[in-house]
Amino acid sequence: MKIAISDSQLTEMMHRAGVRPSVQRVAILSYVANSGRHPTADEIYSDLAAHYPTLSRTTVYNTLHTLADAGLLRELEIESGNMHYDLAPQPLHSHFICRKCGRIFDMTMPEGLSSAATPGFTIDSVDLYFKGCCPDCLNSDH
Image: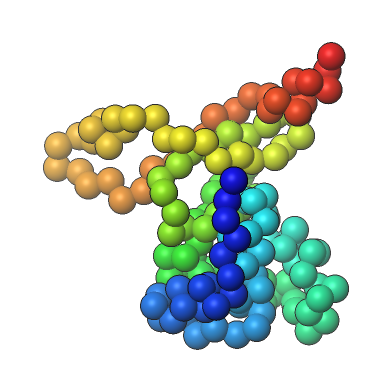
């Protein structure tokens, strides 16, 4: 179970990364960090717009790109053209995508992947996706 990251911790992370915090930026980073959902920009906008009436889709997209460029978020291209977001400063992990419900789950990273690099190459990012059926969807079929 993930421990919630406070707004003050997120603000400090932004400062260290050279990103100027704003109420909307902190809200977007908090949503990604604490929702456990690997949301898309549209999901973030839909869920936050009621709480932040001045929030625009453009602000959400620009903020996500700023936070990803600063190394605070990871962009996960699960489906072509449909970017999902995950908090970057966390232990290396892979993802499982349920083919039925579409939810994305964090999974442990298999051992030994970094040793698979060809000599002369340096790996700075690994994106590993498993696809199948999650326990909830499997249980609903019975």
